[in-house]
Length: 166
Image (cartoon, rainbow, N blue to C red):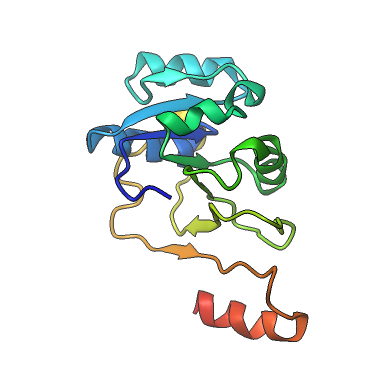
């Protein structure tokens, strides 16, 4: 995994995804974006929230991305997160770090992924969608980094989750 992030891909250009994209661009990071809503992509491109876009998850699920994308942020609903992570399985165990922003993780158990770091930013707004973009949304906020529960025995999981969150 690369710790010197120069280019990222944000999948899901709603409030969270577009805000991550915007603040990343302000820090000099090149931002690629994808959303199933073509109007969100168009707005993000026209308003300098992202630099470039992808047309589909199939286009993203390509090992060639490892030559220039350092980080993928999946900023979609919890159920869509599982679908997206499965949809980019060719990028599992690559040099690209993959993270998410979903609030629910119980259904996100993936085996044999060394580059998946589940997380949840503790931030939000009464606004939604790309029109709610806020480059200060995460200022002063915390992010929960989630432990991988795959190799932890079932009786131990609740105790470890409580330590990770509180």
